[in-house]
Length: 135
Image (cartoon, rainbow, N blue to C red; front, top):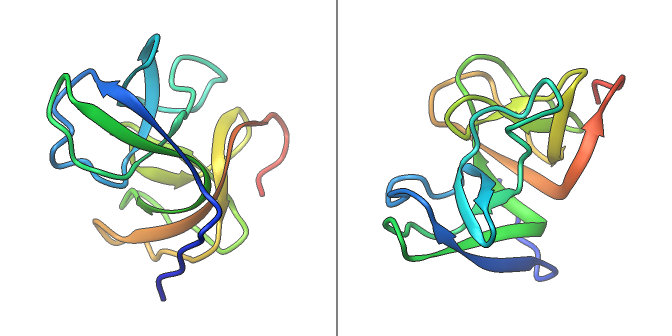
C-alpha cells in the first residue's frame, strides 16, 4: 500500500551524473549543491545518505531530492527490510536494513521480501548514525 505525506521537504540540487533511470534511489552529496548515487552508507564515512531522488534528471540538470517526509525508495535485492527498521543505502543507491555503523536515511514504514526492484516506504530522517543500534 502506497502512503504519501503532504509534510515534506524537497530541495533541488544539480545532478552530477545521469539519473534518468534512478528515481527513488538514495543520493549523497558529491560537492556543494551537487548530488550523485549513494555508494554505500556503512563504515560511518563516504556514503552519507543525503536524500531520495524524486524525479529523473540527466547530468547537469535539477535533481529534486526528498530530505524529510515520506518517500518511496527502491530496495536492494540482497536482504529484507522490516517495518520499523532503520534504512541505509547499499552500493548503487538502493535501500537496505541499516546495521551498526550505517548512516540512516530513515525508518521503514513498509516491508520488503528481498526481491529485485521492490519499493519500501520510508519516513525520512536523514543523517542519523546507527552506531550501535539496528532498528
